[in-house]
Image 1 (spheres, rainbow, N blue to C red):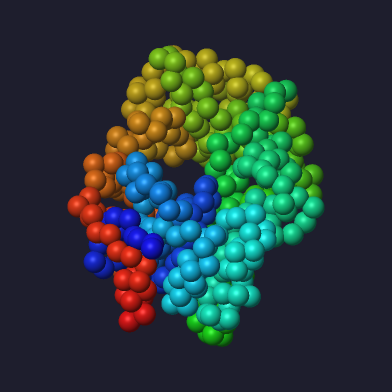
Image 2 (cartoon, rainbow, N blue to C red; image 1 turned 120 degrees about the vertical axis):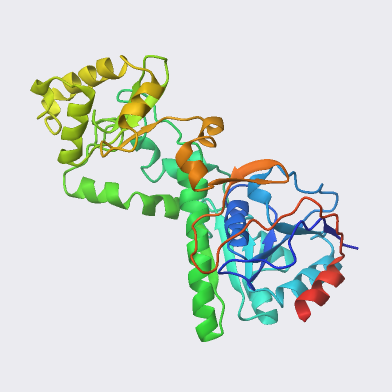
Length: 374
């Protein structure tokens, strides 16, 4: 018998996706983050997980806003229960290797026979077909074949993994959510669902569109740390301060660069060196020397809020205390756990984190199905 682990959901969700029902098959990385976003926007997300799984750790931010049904997917009776739930769902999200759901009897064709309107989201690294489709991999591998990883790092050094933001979350989660919402909108008009094949390698390659455009136009060098946005430009990078902290600057527009030169007291002989690559080394050295003359806090006092395109480089712990993020209430507490607030923001149907600390409710799948069938 399946059961539902502490739902931690309020009685009524808010957000533009209120009323949308999502069945998520438990996994790692981009699929859970995508479902967090859907939940924050008001969708009711029910996660299918293995028997014996512990309740969600409140510190697991990407796991927030779910109810979890424990089912053994190797048990035919459990598969029947899943299909019953899917008959009343709008969206399915799974992140298994290609063919796994089909072997379980939960592939797109089988599910469509029960619910032809269902949008079937598939989240993988390599996609549903291709020579690498069945190979294991992680974010670093998916962005490696797209040209993204090769473009990130110091000149003359090795490529630097940009956390798992470009692959898992940027090229994966966000493209999956965009695809699900587009397919959901179309299904409401046509009455027919469809499969959304969200491959991280596809999404990461799409994210490189601007870089590809620059390359095709002869404006991009295939060398790390030699272009405007990869740290190569001395006016779009970070500098160390007197107290061994860092600040970022990015005055791409000439008028903003001119203002920066004036405000930090850069030698006037370098004010016209912004786009002169022959003088970039001299410009960088001069800027580095200037920024080392004051502490990060002193530079914030002078430059923050001006048009020089400036911000301090903060740690995760420091970010929560920044006045701008505090003013926007960008960090909220749920059950005593600070975490990013839902994004983006909606003026009429605001998103909200679907959780509360006092929930100890446990329901079995039959009770959940009875609720969904109403």
